[in-house]
Amino acid sequence: MVKQATRWQGTQVSTSEDPRMEQARRDKAESERLRREQQAARIRENPAEALKSEFSAAFVTLLEQGRLSIAVSTYQAGQVVFLRADQGKLNTHFCAFNRPMGVAFQGNRLVIGTNNEIFEFRNTPAVAPKVEPKGRHDACFIPRSVHYTGNIDIHEIDFAGDELWLVNTRFSCLCTLDLDHSFVPRWRPPWVSAYAVEDRCHLNGLAVVDGRPRYVTALGRTDTAGGWRANKNAGGVLYDVVRDKVLVEGLSMPHSPRWYRGRVWFLESGYGALSWYDPTTASSGRLTQLPGFTRGLDFVEGYAVIGLSQVRETNTFEGIPITADGSERRSGVWVVDLGTGETVALLRFSDAVEEIFAVKVLPGLTFPSLLEPGHELVGVSYVLPDAALRQVAHPSSS
Image 1 (cartoon, helix red, strand yellow):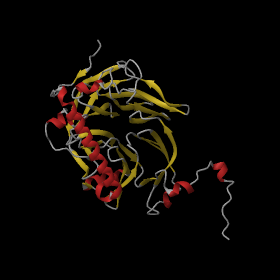
Image 2: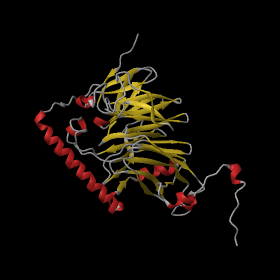
Image 3: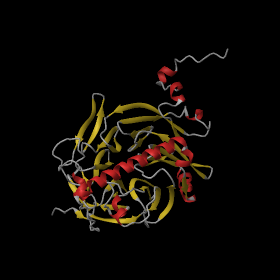
Image 4: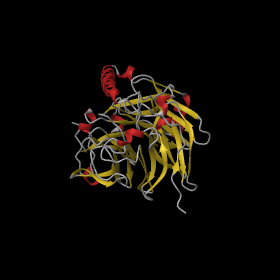
């Protein structure tokens, strides 16, 4: 007997609109664009004030006791943030990028997807003692390569084995990279008939399991340019790539599928929810709802680490449950106990950081640094093979 996809039973929010509102929508979008430009200027002029945050003591305890740090991307503020414990306090290390979205981490590799590029960094421990404040850092990621993809609206990225996979949202596919092409399409949903620069279903999330892409999320099973927008409040799906099967449908803007402890966890962002799917029983449910648009998910020792965004009532986010109910929304990183669904720790951004995309736990790295491509240490840091290092002449002391 073939089991049917789970259908999510949620509040339906009407998305119908009067065509006469088109100009008002354009005006609203332009107003939002100008507001974001002003925010970007504030960040450049006074980053300490614009990027300030508040945190619970338990958040620092999690970092300290877990011996870890957390990388967070915020495309809206144009920053990648390292959250680090520093003698009982929280230290936030900001690095500027052009619309950073997906973040992948494996071994000594850290990869960041931006507006038009994929940046790859390598942890170079020998450089860490030279980074200010000297002697404090236990890791230093320096830029190793950049691949220009063009504007494909990169969303989540992850390693399958040693190969990097990207969610290519504009072309509605999963892809990889090689030196000859902008990207190499490897898989697209069966409901998408062709590759086109049209964001047909807003494919956005990717979970790799056992070294291969396994689960994805999309905001609709649509095959027209931006077709997902018509039913974004309840048209989303969780999909099994290997079995070629819809697992859960009727979701409100799902993101961030992850395999953890025998379940597929995902965020039903339109409700601010952390949800799950059990492949053994083909059942699903919500563990908890949080005060923001949930997007960005990782795990540590039985806890979910979740990104929250305020989201404003722009054309993308209007008409979904979390904006329709008028509740207060927060931006930051929340930590949830998977056993109880309770929030046990949090970090809240209190000013210019309004939207989070990726949340990535960096286990074993307590105080890492990332050098932006223009950093002065990049020009004087050299990494050579061991055989070549044995033949390097050291400067004389005279």
